[in-house]
Image (cartoon, rainbow, N blue to C red):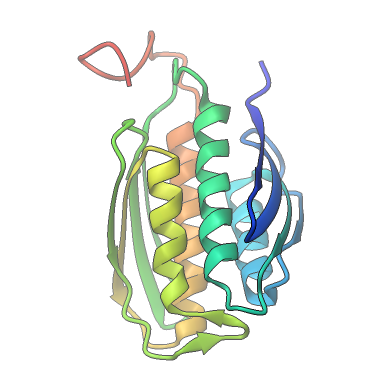
Length: 195
């Protein structure tokens, strides 16, 4: 069974189309109008082994906020739809990922209960065209639209590019782990019987 989802969002601020395949090979075609965000999402797809197609047209003449937040919403919804009823998935994923000076921990639970704990200390206003404060907004939108418990913790680092990139890659690796099918799991991995 294909674990894919296509989600579209069309508002006065953004027009977004995203297709996600959880069982891909890391292929991506991404156009957000924000070069650094394209780079982060390409890394997310490659390191999570997700196939990701994303086209976003947003009001970048204002700033990046609406575009970044809405991409997070659409990606979160796509993850939620692609895992379907969550039968047989591992559910939890954790990765501690180094990138030069940066060391980032990402832990997540596809619990159906959204929550974000975010602890990245970014001290520059922007990296490329992306305002660094939008990194938190992106992960907040993903966690709530995806109904996942998501923790991102900075364990070391000072270079903002490295910290952000390590966070996206750690999220990819943790999500890949959480969405894997384990044949030993009967139904969903919950004592309640549902997620």
